[in-house]
Amino acid sequence: MGLKTEGAFPRLSLRDVEGAVRPIDEAWSDGGGLILVGHRNCKTTRQTIPYVDRIHRRKARGRVVVVLQDDADTARTLAREQGLDVPLRLEPDPYPLAEALGLVAVPTLFFVDGEGQIVKITEAFHRQDLEDYAERLGVPPPLFTPEDKAPAFKPG
Image (cartoon, rainbow, N blue to C red):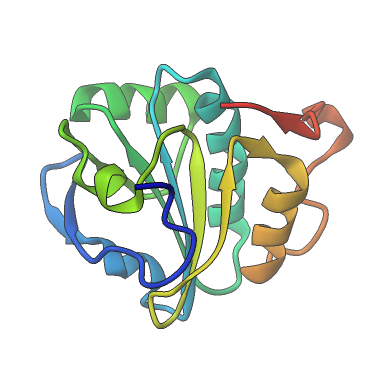
């Protein structure tokens, strides 16, 4: 099975860093949402998450959720290190969401419409795609500043 590129995003529940079980469809319950699936030890995930957090903080509509394939302590440490405000969900091994999506690389970002349908997918760090996601969620440009020194692309 390859990466699921269309159709409905899997509807399942994941724990947040406090242990509460939350349905993933909260991510698109406000008319659409951006979901990043990543891992703390992936350098590209660590580079991408601050911009996803920036989208979360500046969005005018929709929701943003980061799903980490890590334990709660590791996720809390990452959030503290990077000053994150974006909601975090945990995906423990055997990675049911990744399995349902056919994920083979992180980070992978999914834009899901208000009906739960996958609209766009990005694997790795793509500056232009992050700008597109920000625009879809009503973030006023620019998302990136000259101080960011963000590359156009970085593989996962």
